[in-house]
Length: 311
Ligand SMILES: C[S@@+](CC[C@H](N)C(=O)[O-])C[C@H]1O[C@@H](n2cnc3c(N)ncnc32)[C@H](O)[C@@H]1O
Image (cartoon, rainbow, N blue to C red; front, top):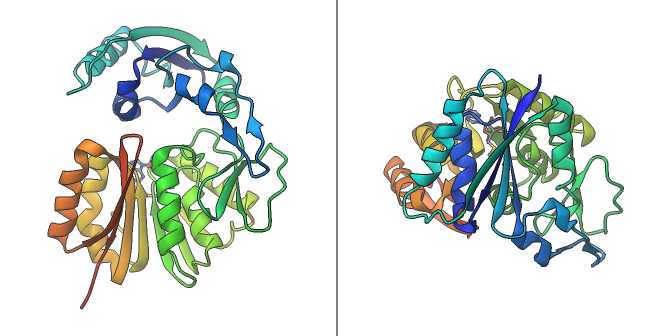
């Protein structure tokens, strides 16, 4: 299928909100190019700086590319994007520019590849694109990924915060369900940590296919169960760990079911929550019976680990 690419130039303050906003309007994928990345540089495990190509990044602010199928695209959509950006509460809009272009499906898949290089995502895990040669140091555990059209290269703040929490709370023998698995990255991490049973589900059929491909690349296709599914609807098996990196208003819908489906002392690890929604989610978690173990924060996003504590 061919897509319409919508490119937005925006000031930095919009960054924590723009992916959620565009996803809510039906975007099939969002890529954010941040001018600050060029000056930051990236370090791989040998201490070499990745040379980022400045031509791939805007001179200032952020460039956001998102993709809509031709069925969903029309002039009203562009007006809705502009209106939603200007309606963001407490965010000054000092730069706004929007252009569109036609892209072939294959071009969009390749767009990821310009921005995705091997990187250390947590103390233990290094995420490596499937098309890149990488020699891991002895202390690194590699997750090999081709995210294709699914979310989850690991370098989004929400994914990397979840990975760190997965590394901390998933223990050998645990049973895990990964709701909104995307590329499958968190399930692969849980498996590599010794989880004995992992189930990865996503509402999006394409994401489930991509996750299955990534499980195969990481030699764990036979050990991780996959399915399409809407949150925890229809799930009956109790788990030690529930993972959900989705969006605050969606996570909110699964808090009570998560509590019911966790074993005693089981942990719910969740992200995709913008800082402004922290209070709402924390209050709901506590009301459901959870105790908050920790909250981590990065780039305007938060991640939470909460325990179903039984005295
Ligand atoms: C932000 S991505 C997270 C991907 C990956 N788990 C990660 O941490 O990088 C959210 C995923 O949740 C899926 N999703 C959204 N709503 C869902 C729902 N109601 N039930 C299951 N999955 C859902 C999306 O299709 C997407 O793949």
